Length: 160
Ligand SMILES: NC(=O)c1ccc[n+]([C@@H]2O[C@H](COP(=O)([O-])OP(=O)(O)OC[C@H]3O[C@@H](n4cnc5c(N)ncnc54)[C@H](OP(=O)(O)O)[C@@H]3O)[C@@H](O)[C@H]2O)c1
Figure 1 (cartoon, rainbow, N blue to C red):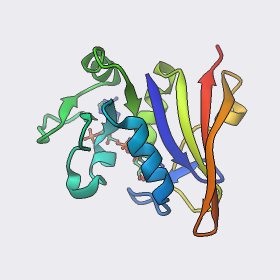
Figure 2 (spheres, protein in one colour):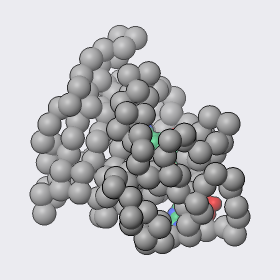
Figure 3 (tube, rainbow, N blue to C red):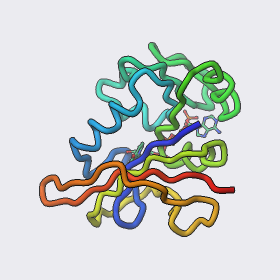
Figure 4 (tube, rainbow, N blue to C red):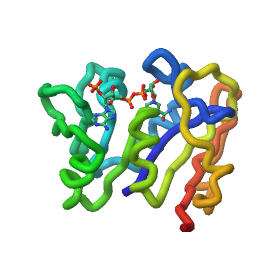
């Protein structure tokens, strides 16, 4: 299983249920990486999807503890159930938010992390993989600047 996330300078990932700064280059990277894949998201992240609709061209799994149906989504009630639901897929990406990343990081062996080099106050954070000896930055896939903000798409891999 893989994971994809955009982090600000302090590894913050969002505030008030949304991403205060979202670069179009990163949205494009996300679309290209996850096209055709199965994506797993928490119910709060799904609430921030455009029109709260499933992402097109992907199988969308949503995690909730509630007994609910969300049209276009496969509803799962635990990370284990989500992993089982996604088991036949060629590529599976965990796409957030904070609580789902934290719970599912141990199931992932690759993390695509866009570092957005700006200071944005966040209320939700991703674990700092630069401080985690189990993970290693192995490749910078892309980098650039948008609206004066430098960004890098980094691949981290689990090494133990
Ligand atoms: N920068 C990025 O790349 C990125 C990507 C995605 C999201 N985000 C940001 O992350 C923030 C949202 O993160 P969040 O942590 O608040 O919410 P979240 O992880 O998106 O969703 C939390 C919800 O998921 C469900 N859930 C959590 N653990 C579960 C479990 N073990 N079993 C079943 N369901 C479970 C619960 O839904 P119920 O309450 O319905 O039970 C919970 O309220 C937003 O600010 C968003 O913009 C950033």
